[in-house]
Image 1 (cartoon, rainbow, N blue to C red):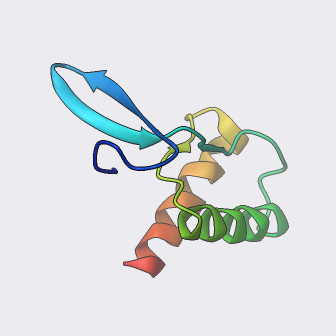
Image 2: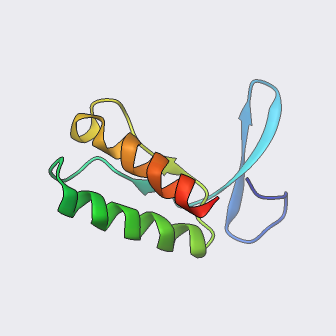
Length: 79
């Protein structure tokens, strides 16, 4: 999350908490559930985070849960 007032951010109120997110996120819905698509998403996730994106969007139905797995692996590699 970002601090209030940071460029390209907007505040989102969640359950009374003030959470500030980038105004642009990365969605992971499209593509096949295969290694090639996973590699493309991993590279996109790394680049989006480098550019200040802090919102990654995935759902259980996206690519047969492959999106959640590639997000988790990529974030684990960066920590």
